[in-house]
Every structure is written in structure tokens, then in C-alpha cells.
Image 1 (cartoon, rainbow, N blue to C red):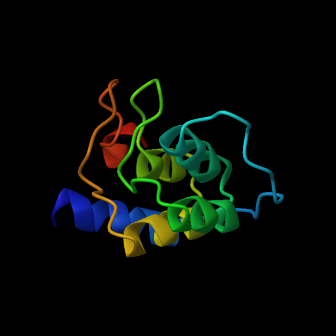
Image 2 (image 1 turned 135 degrees about the horizontal axis):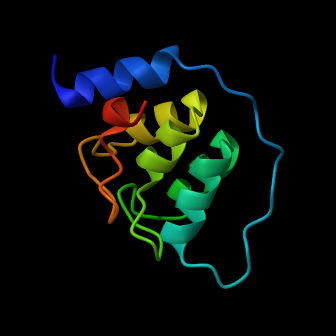
Length: 104
């Protein structure tokens, strides 16, 4: 099984809770806002930030990608939104996170 398929299976099988609706942080770059929303499991905010034009594979200042943030937090719905929007599940962040199956 490819790494992408394994990650997708883990994301779809993981449990998660819904995060409360939150307002965008003033002055935060779109990529950082998307990573924050994904890491918080806020699928509605992920959709809003993507609709506003954020890069689905953009990185925050630490190099983390949105799909990695969602997967590490076991935020299934946020990860689904990102994957449906074309997120590259094989990208690694600056700390080589992205190999989620190896981290679990």
C-alpha cells in the first residue's frame, strides 16, 4: 500500500471532535491560517480559508503543511476537506512530519 493510501486510511478511520468556529487571526498569512484551522480540526474554517484562495499545500512559518497538521491531530473532517481540495499527502514538513504512519 502506498504511503498516500495508508495516510488516507488512517485519517478516515481516526476519531475526532468538532472544533468551535473561530475568527481568522488578524495579519496571519493565509498558509498559516490554513495550517492553524486544520490543526484545530475546524473544517468550516479550512473551507473558508481555501475559498479565500489559500494554497492547499502552503506551509506555516514552521514548515508544517495543513494536511499534516490535520492528520497529526486526528481531525478527520479537516483532512477530508484538504484531500478533496487536492492536498499532497506525501509532503513532509521541515521536521519530516508527514510520515504520519511512522509517528503513530
